Amino acid sequence: MQVLGGGSNFAGGVPITCVPSTAFLVTLAAMKAAKTPVYGIPVKFTFSNNLEVSQCETDDPVDGFIEDLMQDAYYTYLLTVRAYHFTDKDGNRKQITAYMTLLYSGSVALQDKVVAHADSYAARTVKADNTYGDGGVVSINTSTTKCDVLF
Image (cartoon, rainbow, N blue to C red; front, side, top):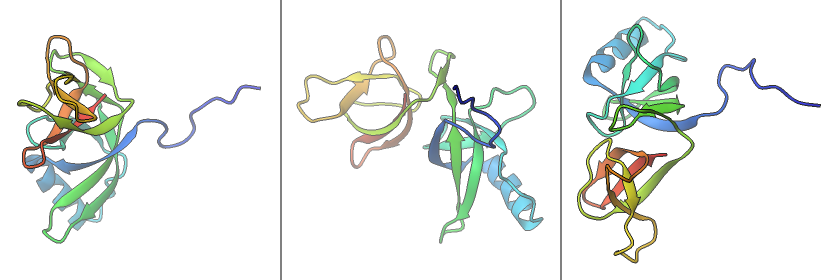
């Protein structure tokens, strides 16, 4: 017997804690004040700032949907996004199967593709390579030389 998926609000994807873009923050604040639910709003990665998403406009491809909204002590909204896709540096749509925090060597930029860095014997170390690489860097922490990568 085969069990078919579907019927639920969300299935698959990868849950990622994201931050809203400045424009989206204004929209979310208004929605929260009006007690309008934000669950299920379609979003897309901006690659402008670390883990930043914006609300999809008409005809935008959907990268994920909001599952939860939290407000931290600094009155910043943190969004739990069920992420399914992203657009790589070449403009290709990629399905997200993993989200990893990795050490990096050299310099990386948001949306860069990465490859293994064999010159470094540190485990899980990558470097930017937009010719042969894969994935997309979605967050960079320069003080710890770690980056978050969507694969």
